[in-house]
Image (cartoon, rainbow, N blue to C red):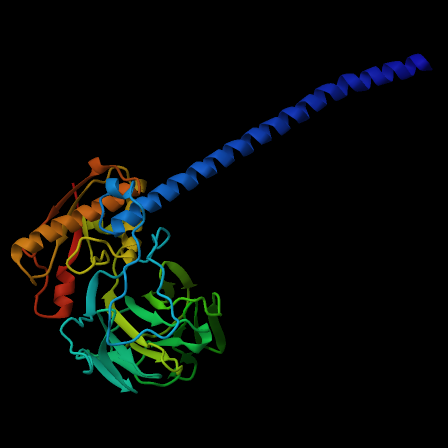
Length: 421
């Protein structure tokens, strides 16, 4: 019996030792893979951090090489203005790199607000008043449109039904340091000041409601009542300042961004859009109610489709500070899209060509357009696109595509073209 037990134990050990070795080998392999993933993750985080740092520098007017070594730019000090900051409000933090921003504005600008020649205290000349009161003002030395609580303004456009099937709307809105439900911006896609629009017997459309960290929209069609709502933090966060609002509508798909964050992504909502207006709700004493930089553009084909069809594409969504070559953060939606396209299609090479409107000196515009084309090239280099795939040049005001007498014409002439080479 003892001999039998001995042989059984010996047999068990013979089988278990290889099995344990296999288990240990698998554990070792998994540990090795986990370590490899950890290294790759840290490397990816480091690369992302370095890329963001380089892009951050380019946004502040540095070249890609300068941006990779310099410290982030310090906040710009505030200037005196005709609209006072609320007591106790802190300024917004410096703009960060919008590395995840993928909003691409429409191709052709159909309304461009230009407040540069407006006089403070007067009603904005390119707007109509629907309700309440609005006037031109200055905040930190920047021209703005200041509204009263529940004031509504709409673009002064001859056509009643001017919103196309595919369009984008962008503007900057000032948000106070307050509870988010105390301040709302209402965007109507229909004329008038009604709280809803009824179409026939089976459809009701409501305004898009935007607050500091979230948004909501509702529609009813054929008895199907849908509300799309996303909210961020609702309590005061100690900051007050500007946020960039970007809206895209493509027949039935609606997207809304607040700064670089996509708040709403609704695949199917029929808004039957015809017109556009802005209302601000906030009756708190001393709060700033203001908007600026309003632009409406008609949409178009995807960038790659345009390159294949026309050998180039034109973008008016790459924006710069006035008279400077420093990119605005909202430009990153287009630049991110171009970088992704060039990474996917490694054979693409472009001549990046900057254009200006006719304002200012010819020689200055030529130099400025070249500096801006270089800034775009530097941004793409910082995102990993090889410099050998890009050339750059400035053409100033020499090749207009529209008249230079209206804000829309000037805005359409201020552009960056990517010509396939």
